[in-house]
Length: 320
Image (cartoon, rainbow, N blue to C red; front, top):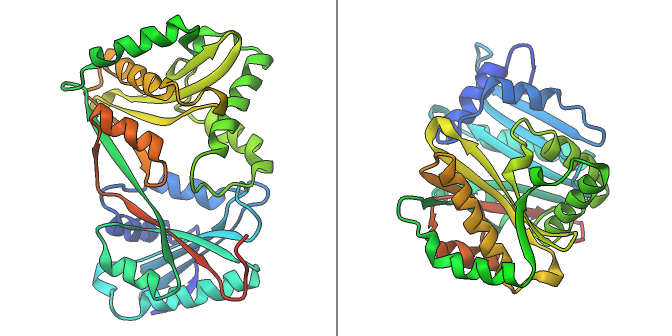
């Protein structure tokens, strides 16, 4: 095997093949890979290596990237090897060269992930200094069995207390409302357990990946409002082609927590999904986010296999 820098002109098909062999349930595409290759966001640093055979066919792939929104010297790393080439030292060679590059970048904190059903992959990472930080997994709610009537009393009680529920589309699309929505998102994201952000870069991330997402629709952003203040939100993405919906981030500002507003928002998200033809709602979970896990269990979400989120502090660096 030979290891070299990945070439955008010749290696995309092979890299996609390796990635999808490692994760067939969440296949990547040529378009997604190309977009990531070409991402030149200021502050982003990346290096991609491939292991190739005697015919220059890609058999292994590694990525080391510092995201623009991440703190200084924090990198995400990932590597995968085609199943027929595993156990032959290809992964070790990719890791060795990736680590040498990371050291030239003064990296001190590395993050990665591995399936929670993959003890071999987990062992590979642990032997190289990674430890389990937390677990990420999705959960699914069956809307045929979900009974929202159980929660209507709580919704009415909140409305009696002056909490109003609406969508972002119900508010005027003005700079003032956009700033309120941004401030609400920032307040919620700051308190998500285990997130690794450089919040100086969050305005650019919000503009590009939230407001600029092709799936962003103002009517899909469900809000809790007190007076003129936005105090909570949940986001829904609809996938009518498979009668599914995705309930993304849900959060409430600190001064209004403990009043079951997040539960109300997630119930309204399920209602919204059902009204738009969804049969299931899927959401992401973090094992450190106990309040949301409690809500999901109460509503009947069923956990699915997921990933361990891994962290490695490189020798000679201090945890910041």
